[in-house]
Structure formats: C-alpha cells, structure tokens
Image (cartoon, rainbow, N blue to C red; front, side):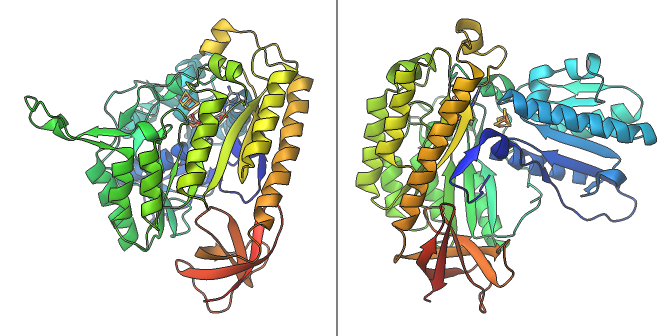
Length: 476
Ligand code: SAH
Ligand code: SF4
Ligand code: F3S
C-alpha cells in the first residue's frame, strides 16, 4: 500500500496480499495468515497473530506446513472478494491431501457473507468477523473437534486496546497503530459500515503506551489508523464518574499531540482524514510538531457536488477545495493524496469532467483510483442504478490515471534541488548499494548506501526523479 507509484489501480492496491512471517519452535501448531485490503486489516492480522500465539500457534510463511490457514479478507470491491475465493479454492486443493488442515476466513468478507461461506460455498471451516478475534482460539478448538464455527458478532466497544500486536513482516522501522474501529458515515457506495460496525475510539492512554513501546523497540514511525480519524473522540470520564457533568474529551488533534510528544524522533502519520470533519485544529497541530508528517490523505471521490451528494459524502466541491486551501495556508509544504471513484451511478460526462478539473486544480502528489463496484446492501445498491457502462468507467479511469501521473511527476520535479529529512527504511529493491526511505511528505527517496543504517534520519538533496521516486544525495 505504501508503494512509490503515483498512480495505482484498485487491483494493485487491494491485490497486495502479504504473507506473514514468524518463527516455529517445535511442538507449536502452525498458522499461515494472509491479509487483503486496507491497512486496518493488516493491523488486525497483527492482533490475530498475537491472540493465536498466546494459544500455541506460531506463524509460518509456508502454507504447505500449516495446520491452520486464515485469510483476513476485504469486501470493498467485487474483485477483492473474487481474489479471495480463488485463493480459497487453491487451499481446498491442499486440504484434499491433508484432511486435518483447517481453513478460516476473517475480516470483512466473513462479516458480509457470514455462515453463507460455510453452507453454500463449503470452502471453509471457520468464519470470524472483525470484532470476534478474541474468540478465535475457542472457535479453532470447535473445528478441531469436528464442528464448523462461526462468530460474526459486531461490538460497540471492542478496540483490542490492551492486546500487544505481533509485528508481522515488519521492517522494524514503521508500524501501524489502530486508534479506532468501525465507521458511522454511510457513504452510499461503501460496504465498510456493514462489515466493521459502529465507530468507536480506543483509549488514548493505550495508544500512547503502544507508541512509547514501539519507540523503545527501535521503531521510528507510527501510522495512526481509522476509517475517519477526524471523528476520533475519547470521553475521559467514560469509565469513571457518570455524575460528572463536564465531560472531558480527547479529540484527534489532542491525540496527535500526545503521540507527537512521545519522542521528537518518532514520526507520526495517520490515515484516513475525511474532508467533512478535518479541522484547522488538526492542521495547526501538524504544523506545530516537526515529527508529525506533512502529508494528508484526503479522499475526494468525485469533483461534482451532485455526485458527492448522491454518495452521501457530506461535503460539496467548494467545501473540499476550501479544505485544500486550509492545508496549503497552514502547511505550505504539505503533500496531499486522494481516492477517486469513476462511473458512480448516473455519473455524466460533465460530472466526470468536474473530477478532472478538480484534479488539475489540486495537483495531488498521489491518488488511488477505482472504478465503481456495486456492493450488496449499500444505499447505492438499493437506491440507484449502476448504469455507467463498464467501458465508460474504464475510459474515465484511464483518463484520470493519466492526469495523476502527470501531476505526480510535476510534484516530484518540483522537489529537485531541495533537501529533505529522510527516515531510512531499508535497502532499495532495485540495488543493494542503495537505501530508501521517505520524507515527511511521504515521497520515496533513494540514495547511495554508504555507511548509513536503517532507522536513522539523513538529509538528502534530491537530484533526479521519476513519477514514482525521488533520487538524491546524502548531505549530512
Ligand atoms: N474511510 C476511507 C475509505 C475507505 S475505503 C474514506 O472515507 O475515505 C478506500 C477507498 O475505496 C474509498 O476511499 C473509495 O475511493 C474506494 N471505494 C469504496 N467503496 C467502493 C466501491 N463500492 N467501488 C469502488 N471503490 C470504492
Ligand atoms: Fe466507507 Fe465513507 Fe466510512 Fe470511508 S467514511 S469507510 S468511504 S462509509
Ligand atoms: Fe476492505 Fe474491510 Fe478495509 S472492506 S478496505 S478490509 S475495512
């Protein structure tokens, strides 16, 4: 998901199934865990690994030696689900050779399809929704005893706050911290409110504690995760005095500040901001602390106000552009990225042109772009017709990808000659003589290895670029 490409298709974004590493002391049962979808799902897999480890399962990278295969799945678009179905068929093939093998589906597809996955499709033994992971060990035991097991109960409280995630496939430098779960927004195209349930925030103390722990372990960057981080709200008096009239709360800006104060060498990123809720207070907090990265992912979805209204996004084109202006005013060097959907129900050529003109006006550093995919039960599915022909969706998608590639390149070229503080993440994929890291604006920067070690900060002057990557020379 943190690919350096400035344009990315739905297929590429959600297709990055990641294998999960681990050690295998003999005697332990082996868990093979594969994750799909958004960063929150990857973060959840780390909670699952932690819960399973405490119950005698060690993770393995090799599905062939697994006793238990879990797929943590995504339902955001139809093709994300198809990919998981294909994978399940492959694993069922493996099961023919090893009848003790257990196969389970976690995450959003589990929540959306529930027992259907067991009954109709007969592809799995175990179905567990995103709020039921604490029950996994006992559900696995049920399967071991020869029963099929399902738990897809959603919760209003579960945040897994005190579970210490096992950092999977980690570079030891950057880590995710979930700060909230669920979503109350009901954008008309979106399945997330159905698969993740009601929005709830996590105790800020446990978030700060996790950030401190990660810093002590050598991590130098954390990304705070939520579907709409701007509506983070923790009621301090929640667990204490119910008679306390003056309720003290922690909002997102205040949470950011608390995490920023953990250590000046710990970088903070976050995702996702919602244009209707993003406040100037958040922007001022970002500007105040050097270690809060100057990068905002602010999904626009469409540049046309009528389409936005049908999407139930809660803002207009003008409102969105006003938020962009606020970012530019308060943090002139900030980078902005976005998500865009082409071919939403009833979208006309003129409405699409407004998305194009908005992109040209904002000149995003980066964009994730998707063709609209109708999802069962959503408001759009019930109320509107998915009437933009596939070829038109595709054509519009290709058009906006072209525009994005251009503006990404233009933004990168503007960095040539500038010097950035870069957090070194590891060795470049292309050459072991080069290292890579990112600047505050989230651009990938590649430079000569020298004696530099990962987890350190270096000042790099940019000398060249592609549309995806900056190339630089270390100045300090
Ligand atoms: N909470 C985030 C988005 C999570 S989903 C937000 O509100 O911005 C990530 C992206 O997937 C969305 O921003 C949207 O662009 C895209 N998406 C969601 N549902 C979709 C659908 N039905 N078809 C195509 N793209 C979709
Ligand atoms: Fe989906 Fe909208 Fe919630 Fe994002 S804010 S997860 S798009 S409903
Ligand atoms: Fe997919 Fe669920 Fe995330 S639908 S995008 S894995 S919240």
